[in-house]
Amino acid sequence: MTVAPAIDTDIRSKIELPPTDLLIGGTWEPAESGERFDVIDPTTETVVAQVARGRETDVLRAVDAARTAVDGGEWSRLSGIDRAKLMFKLADLMERDFRQMTLVETLDIGQPGKNPAVAIAVLRYYAGWADKIDGRLVSIPDQNGRPVHAYVRREPVGVVGAITPWNSPLMTGMWKIAPALAAGCAVVIKPPEDAPLSTLYLGALALEAGFPAGALNIVPGFGIEAGAPLVTAGGVDKITFTGSTAVGRQIGADASRNLKEVTLELGGKSPQVVFADAEIEHLLPMMARQFYLNSGQVCAAGTRLLVERPVYDQVVEGVARQLESVRVGDPFDSATQIGSLISRKQFDRVNGYLAQGRRESAQLVTGGERLGDSGFFLQPTLFTGNNDMVIAREEIFGPVGVVVPFDTYEDAIRLANDTPYGLASVVYTGDMRTAHRAAADIKAGMVRVNGGAGVPAPQVPFGGMKASGVGRELSFSGIEACTVEKTVSIEL
Image (cartoon, rainbow, N blue to C red):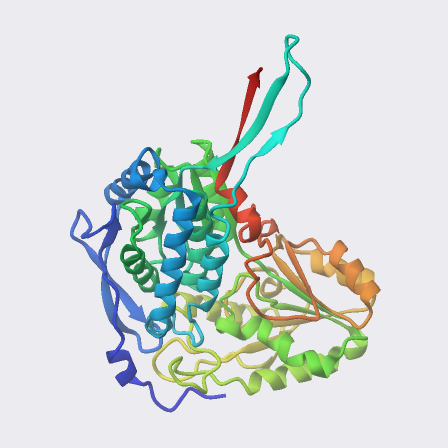
């Protein structure tokens, strides 16, 4: 488990970067202040771009452009069929630029395999919904002695403000952009300051596809300077956010002052529940991938391995063996499985948790060391301990797992639910009765059975319970989240 022998500087020099200004009302513009901020390649710690630093005045200009688009602008006058055509065209352009978009996001976040395939699939899925967002006829009693024709319209909510995370900005961005555009909303998106480039690339393709002015606006910037004003802007009807629970709570509170609708996809400390009757050897790679993929920077990562005692030693040894074979290094090297953490700040945060685990007397089984002299590379790490430890309770957002034993089914469910979070979970068992029982008893928005790491399909809803969020993304739930119902009642 070593860093790749060399960083490929040649491929980095050939990456075609997108425009680095703000996209407002269909044009690229500098920030009003003229300020820019550095985008860092986390694998080399070098500056790869300088992006316009949006602030409140820029956000409000973008919101005004979006407001114009939905309040009588060209975008508001397009039919669902025409919106679908634009969305399918955008998907085609993403397919055309597949390699370059892949290179841009890989450079941006320092992880291999970050290609636009999932984002394209989500975009095509919602393009298919754009002309199928129907209301319904309702039968109600006569009023004033006359029959009543009553129906419910489903209309776009208006302007959607989207704030996205740095771990998979193109994918999570599309989870927010695609249903909003399909529903006829306009979008103002603040991409993550650590990784804004793939979102800006998407903006360039949206212009090429012919989206009307104001339909999609992009304002890079920092959270307090651009994200917070987007949440409180009077012209925004809905906020959708993916990120930490602490920030999500603040966004929910700020949005509620203007009675904005919110969708919050927040943190997690997801359990993997391993029963003794599972096919352990077959499932070991999946158990390990659950918390090392993307260097553990996944909100749904299965970082708590709850293991029935008869197979506890087998799982600990087997998962450690899997982690020790993981190739950590340059994300542009085809042999690399995981790259670096996103930033110095995140690297220091994860290392702080490793030190915390040692202070708590957790047993370090494998990993826990920096790899290389530059870049934020870290070995996948496995501890054993108990569910009361800080490293078992707080979201680390790094490649760190904790194994905790249990003795009975009741113990397993108690431990699985003994967390403030409730985003995702995995159950491993050979007994489908146990599988269905656990799926009902675990308090999480998603339960996978004998299936591991991977992003949700666009056809199924995704979101959390408890401190893991409010609302659902993907599936028709995404359309519902971007629309409002209006009742019409006519006496005949």
